Image 1 (cartoon, rainbow, N blue to C red):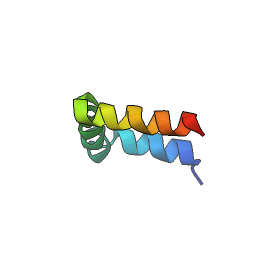
Image 2: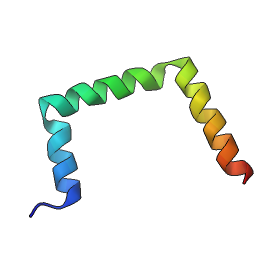
Image 3: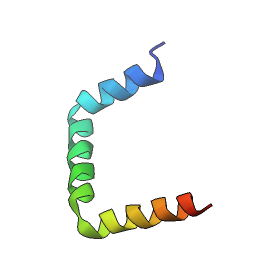
Image 4: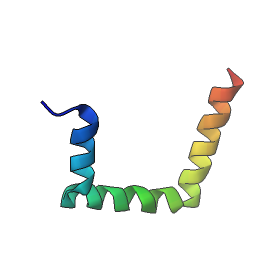
Length: 47
């Protein structure tokens, strides 16, 4: 049985994984999403 990391690695090399990776990269460049992440980190640090 393949380890979870091996399975994730295999998925990321597949066409579906590459497509998902590109979608995530595109979302990460969006200023609105960057602000959401900053706000979430700020709320977590406040605790």
